[in-house]
Image: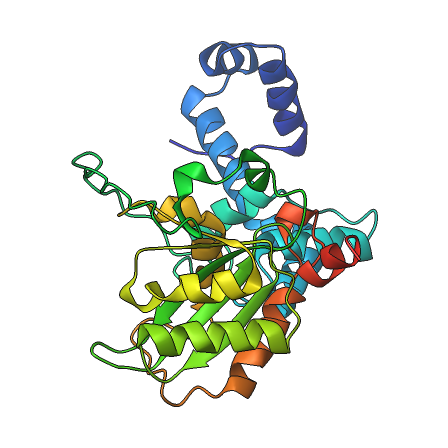
Length: 304
């Protein structure tokens, strides 16, 4: 049996008939060819279109390769900046780019994303909360924190947490984040003693003139004496419930940004305060999707 390739005329006829809703077998019957020929032709067209993705979005893909940085420029930021710089040039959606990465169509490792993939965890329910001692009215449970603080309408409401390094290492980093502007400050701590941490945080807030209206922390032993600093500053200290890190969501999310620069398991002894200040500058000047791609520094200017 002899086979002949489809002519351009036949290809056009196939496309027209298929667009009219006819089945491949019906089209094959009308044109007098095998339906498998039409099936192979359509599969080849699809494959050709898939290969031409890099040609169709060549300018964008070249821009993505040169500007994507998992530490400071996410996929969303790259797309936003590309649309701003190259107006009228074809640009894919964020979801489309992530699909390309997951399918291996572009040369960006799916494990080299800004945020780690979440693993499904088996939850056994909430642990019972402890009863709080309200004798010291400066230190209160988070359930008594006023609702207006949750609205994030004004700067000055801080969340404080510690970032640990190697196991059994005394050195750590204290992170302070403003709930409204997401402004970040990092402090190098040589020890975990609660009175040392209390003095360190208080002096840092005073020295850098950080606006403070309230403080929210977890139940870490290093923050047991932080109520002394809160009393000196004239603000309330709110403590989260045990095993409820989501009550300090801003802090936890910002710590994930810091981990891009200081991975888990890395030692904190060699990290100087100058290096931490440089990390703060990079994160605070980073475009944030939550602020319509403005940085924390730009958002902070609106409240001055």
